[in-house]
Length: 119
Image 1 (cartoon, rainbow, N blue to C red):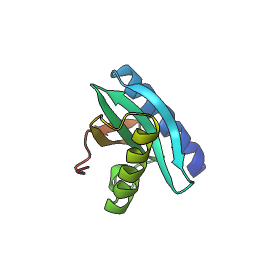
Image 2 (cartoon, one colour; image 1 turned 90 degrees about the horizontal axis):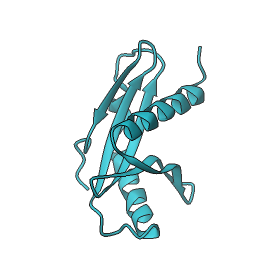
Image 3 (spheres, one colour; image 1 turned 120 degrees about the horizontal axis):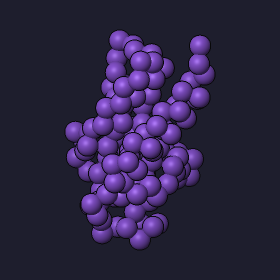
Image 4 (cartoon, rainbow, N blue to C red; image 1 turned 180 degrees about the horizontal axis):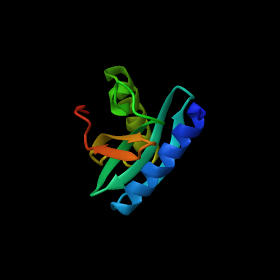
């Protein structure tokens, strides 16, 4: 059985590759604010600042990886992205949260733009 941290790191690597191949510019990975809020990937595309939450399962389960992104988690990501924007002089850019849902075996990747959360 694979270690959860290894599976997560693998998923974030695959997600980063996917994003770059699809025109995103990666600004940060695993960005933290005061060790409370973390953004898996911060990127830009089409003049928007995007926080990408990556959820990975090693194998199919009853729930899909993206279903782990709760409203509480989305609020934390939103707060962290607002702080990132201020700290990196990007506070005038539109903000967005996307989700990438990955299953390692057999491989599948789903990308959810805006992830149904309003910023």
